[in-house]
Amino acid sequence: MGGKNSYASIKRYQDKVYDKVLVRLPKGKKDTLQAHAEAQGESVNGFIKRAIDETMERDTEGGETT
Image (cartoon, rainbow, N blue to C red; front, side):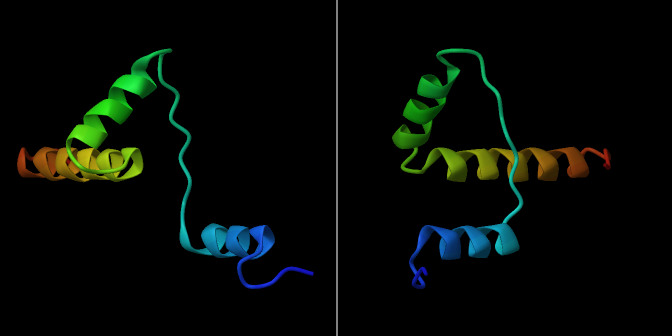
């Protein structure tokens, strides 16, 4: 039986609140990505989310839609 901080509890919450996307990178690219994100003062996840948001915004401004 798990408490509110148990793995099962956390997993249920994350499954309910977040979508997950698997990103596969060539060997060595993860280290480069992580170093860049840290240099910008953010996490890898935060950097990826920002990159996606900025690209989608730029694409939309350019007249492209998805």
